[in-house]
Length: 343
Image 1 (cartoon, rainbow, N blue to C red):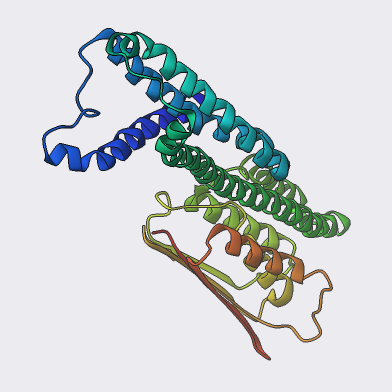
Image 2: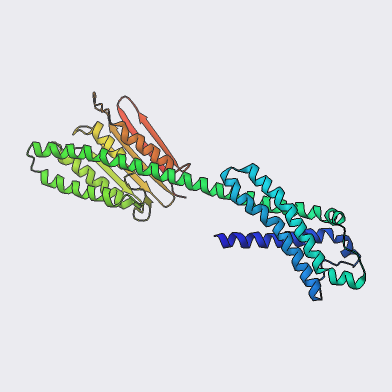
């Protein structure tokens, strides 16, 4: 990661360096007398070009490194002071390097050294631009890093909240299921062993299949197991109708997503007289879930809202902008309609 960053910095600077000098040299290029864009044909000329590129690179690199070290620590004043101190040092280093490299030519041609003031006037524009390049490159990279960091933080918070929501579902379901089995055992029902076996299957699903999405067929099997478990605890048969359609093995959803709706229907509307209607239809583009139950008079559970509020929040986190949940709580009927888009 670090090597890619420096390669990008260096490549972009070289491109910036040549484009800047090319723009400055356009009048000479038009008249056919460009000196900068022509590659030097002697060792001293080549050394001078390399020294110019290297010192120019330092004018960009040093501000970048200073910001890289101090800016994340909120030491902005120190960073600015260091940059203002470093640039004059680099300027004198560049001036000295050019004086040394051009000394032999100046002696041979009897030309005097360039005055420091004149040299400063000729190069201050480039120095400022190189320093601005280094600082701009840092802030662009920093903003990109902060954006990625913010996305990672949001993702971590989302995963933490989803884990918390899943941890709420499991105790809630266990509490209700154990109450059901306790009732069967207490009444010495012949269905007690069958209920315990079914509960073991559901428990296995809860413990080992909650970390990644599962085929919709597996969730459907889980719902069937839950319905069977509910039927065992009632002496008279429960009128529950569960219909499915579509490629259940090809569509994946988070586990334990639909069970709170079914659990709520049985808790508040499971009788031998009233029908619980559950329908699930899916294709590769959308999954549609429908659950309807008639409400029993006086049936009120202070903890009943945990599951529904939980699944609402999970849907918001898992399918933002890709789901529609309608809850119709009427005097006689309680209806859930859920649509999940997969594309």
